[in-house]
Length: 414
Image 1 (tube, rainbow, N blue to C red):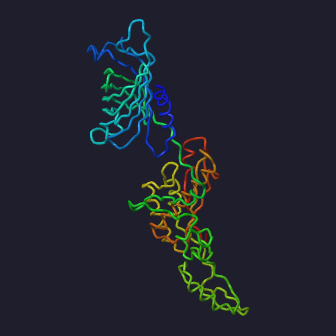
Image 2 (cartoon, rainbow, N blue to C red; image 1 turned 90 degrees about the horizontal axis):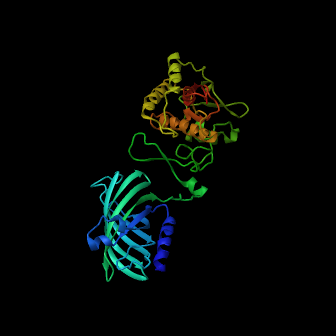
């Protein structure tokens, strides 16, 4: 008897220690034992019911099956053969059941409001220091209240094996999910984890390069760096800036510049000065100030408030893509111009999180223009300002809406 009582206390506590990848729920129910019904066929004689408490743990095996472990304690049971002057004995009960569910995705949805089931397995109980075995057969119904909470009713017939008495057990109670701890990860593991990028044109997941993949340490990932083994500048797509060298190194400099990718619309030309330095020829002299049509400026102003993202994410909404397509056309119209993309947020939430979100959203716009519209990487600069530069009052919904924006600026140089 003491072994069964220990099981009734230990089994639920063991369930609390399960890992997060095990699907389990627990239950707390009132139980009513009926020894009188199977003997007299008066199954609704409530006066002879013996109340107690039941605890259960339920493990999800697959869509149609659960494994349930239940324990019960009845302090005073109306047991057959008990004389009028004899004290009512207590009962301890435990069983293990395989539960067959009808809400298995084929008959009923797994998350249906009504979840009928039937169970069978093996049980053991102790009364008057006598231990007996029985085979239980149960019918039950769960009523789904929330994702992690259900109301459960069940009736079980227990066929005794041996000299015990057949009896019924009726239960009514709640079934609830157990708290689960998230797996702890180290900062190094977080850094190594690839960040999934939104799917723009394919149903296959696209993985954004990890920021740690920067072999030359110039702040430009290898995937976007056309000189991944040489520190360079973003204006030159990650390649080094072309600088003057002494005469004895002129041939080497010229060879290096010929090998480096050309990111200018017009090739740069050099000449050797009297001081043995390489200088730009007149052909590479600064161009005229950039002149932009008013219609294009108006459209860039319009685009500021018409780039939309998923809530608290950097994923572009579909209605934003035609706007960015038009921005790409404007860039193609001015081949010598560079585009500055600035992300901004309202002041709702933590400022640091807002800054990170604004940077990611600006980068997502740049990512789309480069990888989907073919704009050269070196022509676009992206950055985020968070909530530091509002253009309206953050105290109203309309003001916050105006502050959530992505700004575009065409310039001669970045």
